[in-house]
Length: 92
Image 1 (cartoon, helix red, strand yellow):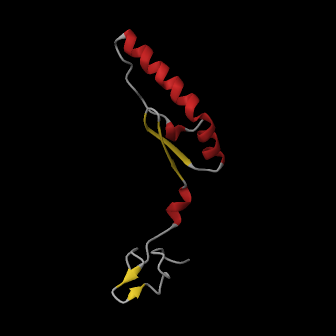
Image 2 (cartoon, one colour; image 1 turned 60 degrees about the vertical axis):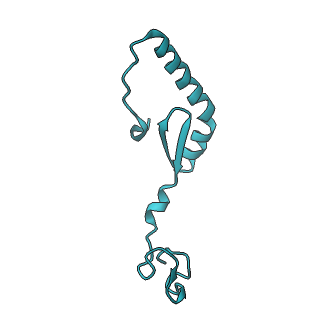
Image 3 (cartoon, one colour; image 1 turned 45 degrees about the horizontal axis):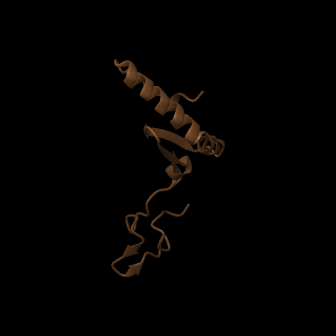
């Protein structure tokens, strides 16, 4: 079990609303089960900001940093940045 994806939700007081929330959670899990599984196999982070919405992120983007010469823009006042070759990312 991955603890970074756990959230604590207050249970609705109304039985009808509780039933609707439960059904929406079941539908949400069913609709995204395959995509979530593929993302986790690839090592991606899966975030659920709201029902029926997913945010998938590759943690390898944390290793990239902006070019110091062009501040990540890829261009300078003289044209394309020669330090990063116009990518805006610092080269390793």
